[in-house]
Amino acid sequence: MHPQKGTLRYSFQGEVEQDSGVSAFIVWHGILMILAWMILPAMAIFIARYLKDSLGPRWLTAHMTLFAAAAAAAVLSVTIVAYNLGNVLDDPHAAIGVVVMVLMGVQIILGVVIDKLWDPERNYIPMQDIVHWWLGRLLFLMAISSIIYGIVLVGNPIYFWFPTTCFMIIITLSFIYGHIKIGRVAH
Image 1 (spheres, rainbow, N blue to C red):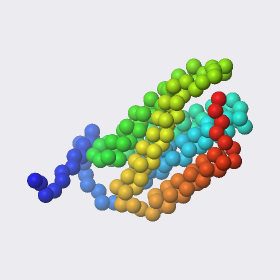
Image 2 (image 1 turned 90 degrees about the horizontal axis):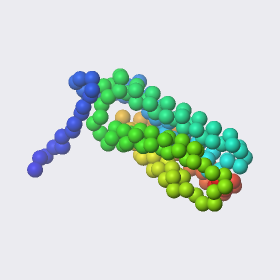
Image 3 (image 1 turned 60 degrees about the horizontal axis):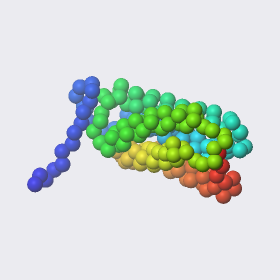
Image 4 (image 1 turned 120 degrees about the vertical axis):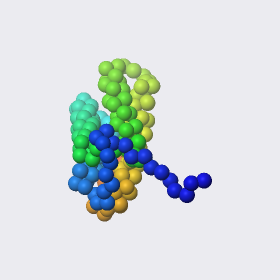
């Protein structure tokens, strides 16, 4: 029985340095990931779930544009960390992040396929639509758990907790409002 746990730190750029402070790169990574995985997806999901009737065919353009911006912010965020901090993959936060990024690609491809297969005369919801909805929900929850874990890793700074908590409350209240006042729209 070993009294201490070991850790694995790996960097594609050589030796990994231990740093006690939160670097600007980590702060930007966090800001971009909160934007990419909390704010923009919530807006895109809200549009798809509640605003299809009021926006007409523009809902899909808005939905795709918001998710394209989220994907770009996520890729930029990962690039910032990989370039500046050595692409460190050593904890559950990074592991969840890698899974989320890969599944994001699957989700985007699935969304494109769904758009191409869409039939206005259909009288049932195709399986690929249901998979898209549930994979999106799973990704959203995984991303938020990764954001929370990332905040814990950098020492729980208030400048991350306060806005993250506020955004989670606003998102939750927005979806409650949409559900009660607007109602789900399915096409």
